[in-house]
Length: 329
Image (cartoon, rainbow, N blue to C red):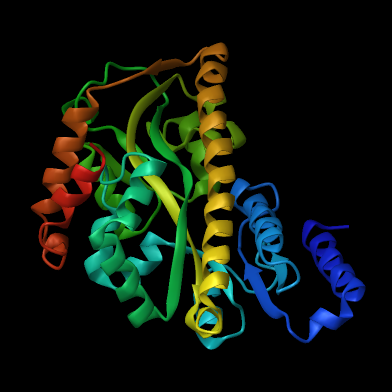
């Protein structure tokens, strides 16, 4: 039985056991494109369990993974149309809808999972969430950590500052935002589909790729590379979102319970991801890779200077970058 069917069966079983509550339940279809083994997919079950513990029988939470309810990219539309109630919402997708928030996708802006939460809890975070609510018709409950992107080189070299990446053919996803990040790092960004990265590294079509360490392991890129450079150039996060149509039905107590359940699910996800990343440093060393740390401050200063002097920063909220940087201190 699949992950989704198992969860649906459990939900149906609960409904059968408590028929008197069924009419009073609020249905929550929680959808994601990620596969069952992804940690933030598993965190959806944590959310469901935590919410049930706080307000027993009030919500009928139905979990859908692997795009089984809506295809990748259609989740937000589904929430806004009322065809689903919850999903994960990336900062990149928010920036597509509200270009001023492109700032939040810039390299080296966020430095840890805790930094994302400090932002969301701040005055500008409250303004951000309110604007997203007003313009996108969803509430953001918490940010879950997706991993920190590092450089993975085909041939080892001394890397201390962005100057050391000059001419390095760095594979990046094909969108403008990703290619801009590669250039800001000092490399020569090269677009290549993810499915071709292993062969590209093996043959020398590309010199390097960037991804969180769990992706390097899962895709076996360590088999065709010699070095991991811990640039930590993008700490990636994704938001748990619920549509306003559903949110506005809830009492203050229920809103608190739902927010606490979201935080608990991200707590679980974050702890698992951090532990996995820490484990992988030793794993890659055992596989013969060099794992090195550059001058991260030099990289951060250079990348942010490139972003802030570019045309794309013209619409960014004035002073936000400095305020967000200060929240990490």
